[in-house]
Structure formats: C-alpha cells, structure tokens
Image 1 (cartoon, rainbow, N blue to C red):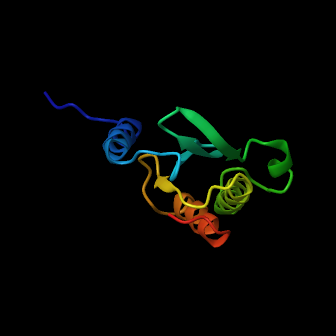
Image 2: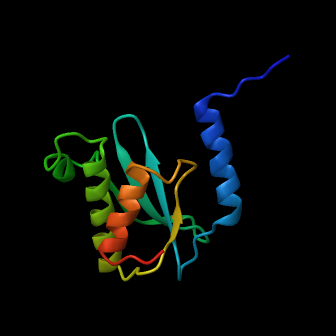
Image 3: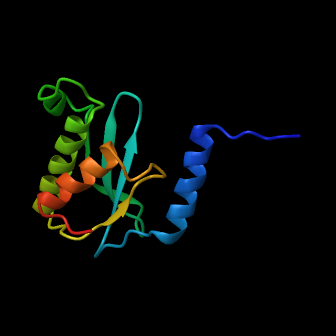
Length: 122
C-alpha cells in the first residue's frame, strides 16, 4: 500500500522539523512567516510567554490599498518592510527567522531580504 502525502502535509512536516530547532526568546524573538493563496502574514513571537509582539499582513486595509495584488513578491517586500519598522519601534533588533516550512525562495526570500534591509538582524 502506497501512502501519498499532499504538499500541505509535507509543508507541515517540514515546519515541525524546523520548530524543534527554533525558539523565540525575549532577547531574540521568532519572526514567523505564513503565506496562503491570497495573503502573506508575518509575526514576531516570544515563545517563552506565548505572546505575539508585532504582526503585519497583506490583509490589513492600509497595506492592501498600497498593493495591486496581496499575494505577490511586491506584497511580500512591503510586509517585510512593515514588520521590520514595527519591530524597531518596539525595540526589537535581532530575530530568529522561521520560514514556516516554506522553501526559502520567492515570496519568503523577498520578505526576509526587505526586513533585513530595514534593519532587522537574523
């Protein structure tokens, strides 16, 4: 009997494998990225308390008005810039990057690069 896993199941397995190694602390919280078919989400999380410190997504009205599409590389770059600015305002400079099981390519890479360009350190 052959068991075939879907792409979503494989991503979840990769995500769990990554999360075993990555932990957000108060000194260096975790920058978690998730992308759906329509939107891109980013959160900075302190795993010791279980609190989201900063978040940004292409679902927000003020960001959506600046974009033609909410699920392309331009949107990912804008989310990366926004999350970095909000984090720096809260005094967060260093983070651990959690790609959420997604391959470090395309939108995920664009978000990470734009966050680095705005001053976040991974």
